[in-house]
Image (cartoon, rainbow over all chains, first blue to last red; front, side, top):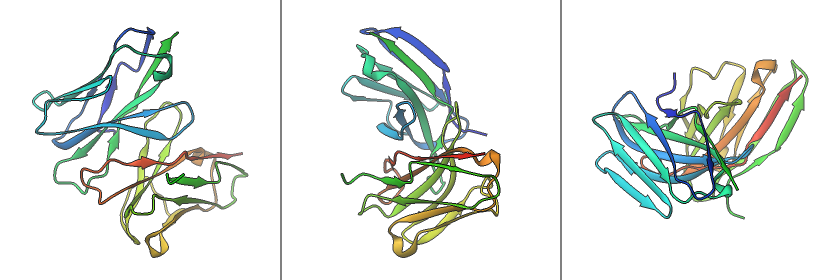
Length: 112
Length: 114
């Protein structure tokens, strides 16, 4: 079973709108990472947030982490057509040897 | 380009044949991971190396799968007696020291077993 689960599975928006996707996980973690995958290609690391952090920003990306609810959200502001991709969260479990466990991803389509 | 590279990018093989994939990580990275990804799913962990030592293998990795990382540099993933269910994208990633380090992924090798 996969540790992280993204929600929604698919999201379709217009260019310029904000996109929010969520990740829920089951066990305690020491960090959570978000990755982007363009169609048929490898994953690109976007941002890492540690378990003692609540919010992190990187350019148009904003990630929040709520360890009490075991959830994280990724907000992409002012979306562009180039943001069209699948987005995955990956969790590193507390006390583990750090093997990131990926969810099924959110497929984002940004219409120009 | 000093990113992670994988070869071949595409492989079509007949059921029962053996295939081998290669991954060249970023040179200073000591951790190397193999994942398998099928359509609509996230990457599933297969195995990882720290330097030349294979430290963990997933239960998904049947006896037909073997991976090596001689001298702690490039890695190979071999699948023997391929089955149609082995059709997937095989991704390699590397990182520096693991732990909280981000992973850098290669473009993947797409395997089709006919």
